[in-house]
Image 1 (cartoon, rainbow, N blue to C red):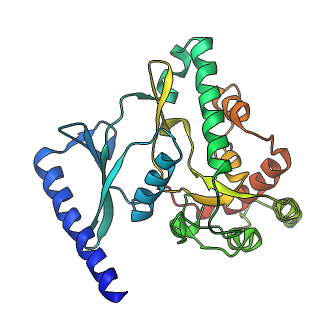
Image 2: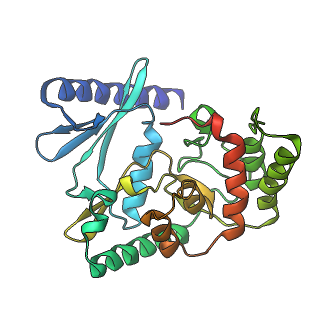
Length: 278
């Protein structure tokens, strides 16, 4: 086992060398995305703080389910630096840039596609039972986890305990308000949930659209096995008045998760200061 692990590390280090070479001599940083480098021959290298080998495995697993995901080619490790992933480029623009330009028929097509993709993900067989973890069984990387990582957790109860442990009473919050938020945040523990395959960061900027259809779902660094509500409540934590996104999310969600939104919203308010923005 030790020899196999050592060989695996050497392979990742080799690909890391290749990635550095490609970025140095051929990489073209995509505008506003300094961690994404466009290469010749329809290839992309992602090299960012949150990039782990688990993301490559998540991409491959999602593709095996039939989801529109760039083809992950290899993972590269770099001494004292984040990892990198070489993948194929997919044509398209991010959903938030084109939504208002789409006609009603195209908008409904995208809603229908996203509903279907969520159903596929939720119907995938969970090899880890009640465990909350990455696709490989390791810790989950999430903006909502202090330090960016949480778990693996034995079950949903341990997962919630790990999150609420970092609840913080802001100086302007009185004791009564803090207690109410704690009670509301804990209510989610009384609702049973399936543990399902989850993207974990399914925001509009991670959905590509081409010719009026979803062409790719990007950025699988937070993917793993989570309680079923997590996909929805996490991307509804910002809901400015009049914004199209909350309505879109609710329209593709297989369940309203109204109680979970209230409870998880309280948890977010209590723990937001510990978030790591990846």
